[in-house]
Length: 115
Image (cartoon, rainbow, N blue to C red; front, top):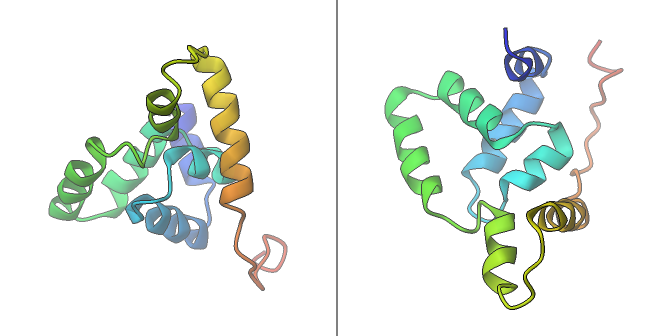
């Protein structure tokens, strides 16, 4: 079992539903999902593959594959080509912006209340 698979097993059904909704949204980058749930892009793809019907997964992959909006580091690199910032700095900047831009929505549910 890979670490990503182990991480996916630990998620509550409500978290899985939230991740799927975020993955379908055009304006939510993978970095926001990573900041909130600790899942990398390949882990989100694995989750979507296991949770969606085959045709729905294919439609989602075709939709997401070429979108720069789903990859915040690509957006930043396209905007800042003249600055020539290192990829590590871009990722740090993207994650900090994702935490500011995409806070967790308020919810009456907590991990303690679900136990």
